Image 1: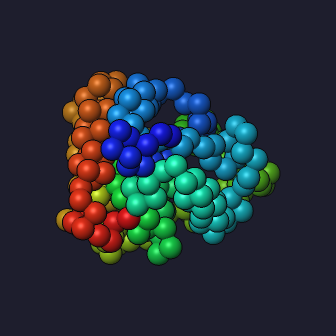
Image 2 (image 1 turned 90 degrees about the vertical axis):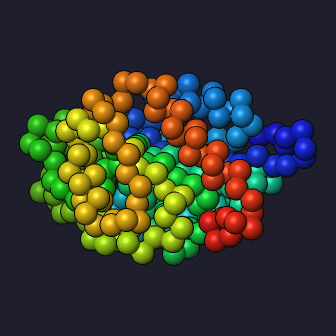
Length: 239
């Protein structure tokens, strides 16, 4: 990252990938290029059990430990503006982003967040999808006893009403395809339990990973810019 012409440090955007992908996931590549051109710093990481990260989620508390280490690393970089940290989480990455937002320790550090078809685990996988992702789940949880996988998955479910207590909810934008068959139930759960706290925008005719990326990326950039460019005084409490 580099300081801007006026000497201001750049904001940082942390990108969290979906289940079974990695930090090299190419879906957001054009978005990432656009953010770099706008002078934003990026941090992409492998989630536990993925690619170069051999960490496992023995229980949900390990996710909190992972997120804490991630933020410690990010805030340790003197080149970025620590008061302007944003999160983009897709699917499984959306769960991690939501966990950070709802964390008492980390939530106040997130200036802005975008969740794309977040997997909040308010539902159980369909048999076909479960069979497809089971090998990945075994890596994530580090447990070869398949009988325990259902219990692990259930432990990931966010509590009902968690988003009703979200501070500064205007910083959160949830984007979801109206034809998403993977996490559509999660969106309905969020709509019901998030109340008026959460802004959910439907993407017409789109599935889990929207095809019209230019439209999607424009909306993400718009939301990030709106929050990053707010004066510090008016953004107090969202740092």
